[in-house]
Every structure is written in C-alpha cells, then in structure tokens.
Amino acid sequence: MNAHVTRFMPLRCAVVIGSAAVLTGLAGCGLADTASPVATPAVGLNRTRVPLGGPLELTYRFTVAADAERFDGDYLVFVHFLDADGELMFTDDHAPPQPTTSWQPGQEISYDRRMVVPVYPYIGEVTVALGLYSPTAGDRLPLAGEHIGSRAYAVATLEMAPQSESGFLMYEDGWHQAESVPEEPDREWRWTTGQSTISFRNPQTDSTLYLEVGGRPELFESPQVFTLSIGETVIETIELGSTEPSFHTVPIPAASMGDADAVTLTLTVAPSFVPSEVTNGTNNDGRELGMQVFYAFLEER
Image (cartoon, one colour):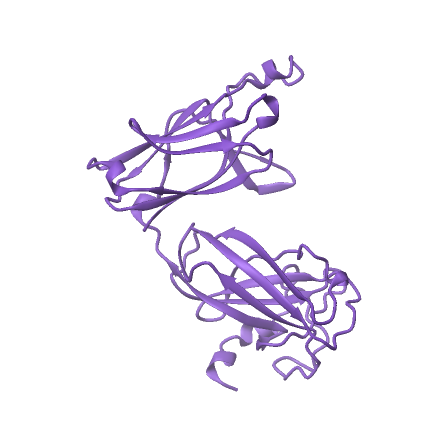
C-alpha cells in the first residue's frame, strides 16, 4: 500500500452518514474492490488555483461502462474536497441532471456546475474525490479510476490560495439586510435600492468582479438594466432579462480604479420598484428594491 493511499485511511474506514453515505458492499475496510466498475468519472476545473471565497467551475463527466447493467435506482454524486491529510473539508454533493436510471451502457454524461470555495481555514493542495451513492440504501457503486477507499475516487487536484485584502468587500449605502428562505438557509441575498455602493481596498492591478444577481423583469414592460460604475466611468452594463439569477464576470481595469487607497463601486438598477406599489397593496413591503445580490467577489488578476 503506497503512502498516497495510506493517508486516506481515516476517510476509508469511517462510517459517515449523509453526504458520504454508509459504505456497504466491500469485502472490508481497506481491502481491494474487485467489483466491475459501472462508469469512469472525470472532473474538469476551469482553474487549478482558487482563492478562499472564490468561484470554481466544474465539468463532471461519467462514461458508463459498455457492459454495465441498468442502474437499479437514482444514485447521487458525492464530491469531497480533501486536505493534504485526506481530511474532508467541504463538499459539492448533488443529483446529476440526468438521473442514473436513464444512463445507458457506453453513454457519456457531461454537465457543468459552479460553486464557491468556502472561506475555510486551510491553504494548500486539495484532492477532489467523488463517487456514486444511494440516498436510500446507502451503498456506493464501483467506478474506474484512482480508488482511495470506500469507493471514493480521486479525480482532480487544485490549490486553495489566500484571499487578497482587496477581496474583502464593504457594503456601504443603498443595501437592505441579508435574507434567506427556510428551504435554503445557506442561500442568502441582499436587495439593493435603486443605487447602492460597495467599497474595497484598491489592488492597483487589473481585477475581476464576480457577481450573481437576480432582478424582477416580469414587473416591467422592458428589462431592468444594471450599471456598474466607478465615479463617472461605466465599467459594465447588464440586462436583467430573466427571472432566474444570473452569474457575471466583470473585468475591472486598474486604470479605472485610480490611485486612491479605496475604490467605491456604484451599482445602479433601473427601474427599481416598491412591492406594495406594483402589487396594488397585495404585498405590503414598502421598501425600494433594485436587484438581489447573491454573491460578490473581487479577485486580482
């Protein structure tokens, strides 16, 4: 047994409920799995170095074995991000968009997901491991690839890097308090007013602003328009034409940020609205609202 496999022994031998699933079907803890793999997994990353709090785009691919039998249930994908000691830090567990009961022998299943790397107390190399598990029976399926135990398979590596000082954004004027719904308590957003501001330490270098926002275009005859500016300089203009939240990558040149120690971004949404007015009093919310901001992150290039 080589050192790489040995360091994952704590993960392999543990019985974990929830995202990790309950391990069944192996001859014993740490023993080789001789069952025929049902698929070959792969994960592509849009980048291999991500600052804490930064976005990461992943492309998941499963190539179903040519001799695989039909799946007897809808399996979920568990995705574990492990530190250098093989300890679980966070996950991207999910249901594949195409249920496994519809996967065919020889078929390639491919889809994209986006996540935010948590602000976790760790800097260094990360191993991405995944597998397929049943949320009802708790069993995991054998896959082809680098098996690290408990039918988890190493599919990619990345580096978690420190967040720069300019990445700490201050919500200044024109913001309402954070909100969420009971169904997704970790999915927070803040409403802007018609005009709001964000400030941050000037990085003095070209940077990228990542934003996930949502508007209410169905309330108006024409779409809402979101403008991002620094002083008199317009950085980006975005049309909020969908009722679904949208993700945007906005380049911010160093020249547009000037020489001051701090930079103030102005977010203008037109038109804004007051729920009690546009619903004729059905909704008694009297706040001026512009758009929902689910995520904002600045990264130096």
